[in-house]
Length: 196
Length: 359
Image 1 (cartoon, rainbow over the protein chains, first blue to last red):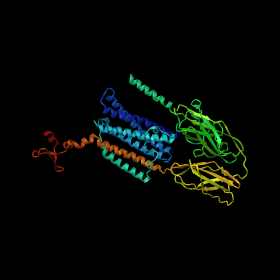
Image 2: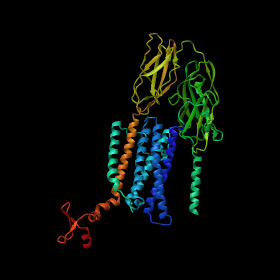
Image 3: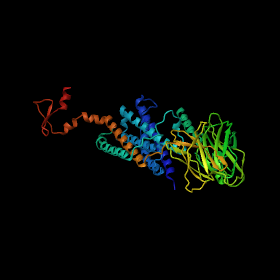
Image 4: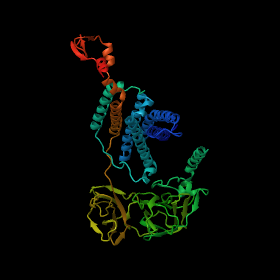
């Protein structure tokens, strides 16, 4: 029988690998549309990167909830430190950013990269998702090995201290999230159509 | 051709990169561990190297049966130092059941304030490190051997270094009957929570009185702490005590020394250390889960709304109403060029086709 912590590590590795591919390709798509076409910056390369980013982000989105669930099981029902609490929060943020990235690309098609503002938004979403997933993984490293690759970086998002919300405040925030998502999916999402 | 070569070089670099990484550069944490962690990288001849560090063991006080003794391990002259150092105090080098507690010693406190035989410390810039274990001697009188082992890496991280001291003989002497000391059940607390001024509980044996001196680590002038017996036996001997040591805040360590008395006996115990810990984390797992999913949903809402706002399809639909006009039963009137009559809403609307003709 495989322990939830081992399974969590495996799932996290799939998520991180997929999202690195997705992020690099998303940035590549943006760059491809900003830079002038050339032998290297060809249409076929753009199409490949666009599809790779969609495939990578979809795979990350598919495995992220599994990684979160196995992480939950590995935590054994305790949020015993600020690091673990922040791991939950950063995982949620990563899930949000990846979902938005996939929704945007799926609804608008590859044509979204031709609209500069949308292309910038999409690439920024991928980079933010990358940052959030990296933070969550990095906290995992901190918890297990006492160190992380982020230690060598000159900056570090807050993780040692957590803004703890009481259960009623978290629940209210969750309710607000559910209501806003409902309205966005009901009103805004149907109006977003594929860009030719 | 060049592009293929670059890709190949990149792939080979990525494949080889993990081989140059180090295994556990952050250490494994303080714990009770046997010699070489029972076969870790540091004990594997193909992965390890002999450390050239000088390792010395010394005693802080003479060892008497059942009394606390301070065992100092000094490590110096390390030619390939790393930030983190693992130090063991061992009673044998068998590789299993090596800890002093396996040989009858009782751990009162390790150098980091806990009660482990393996601890990790940061090497100071002086290049010399001294770690002190406070232990109660075994019940068997006579000779007992202690070893100190070190584990460390190097800045390059290519090898796991290991070094072990010569066996150090501790002679446990017999003591007069009734000699007061620390109870063999008592373990010194490693820390108190910041701001906690609750009394410190101390268990002793054969003591009629105790005194406790304390000071902040780094100071030189100890202060006496108020002590009271909490034993209800009513006899002259009292073995349960409460000591009031002031609360500490931040990352301050307090060191304290217990002196046990019984008649003419006055036994100074080794200095002990007590750190200050942050208050326990009060986060709730369900709050963290709700917080996490709330953020996920809010981020989705915000970003999808932004995508909708920036989407050119929506903007075009808001401006271009030709399809609506075409599909409706609007009536064109020659009397009012440029305007159409809507019989349902009973109002005039602008004719987009007329505007195009004029333009």
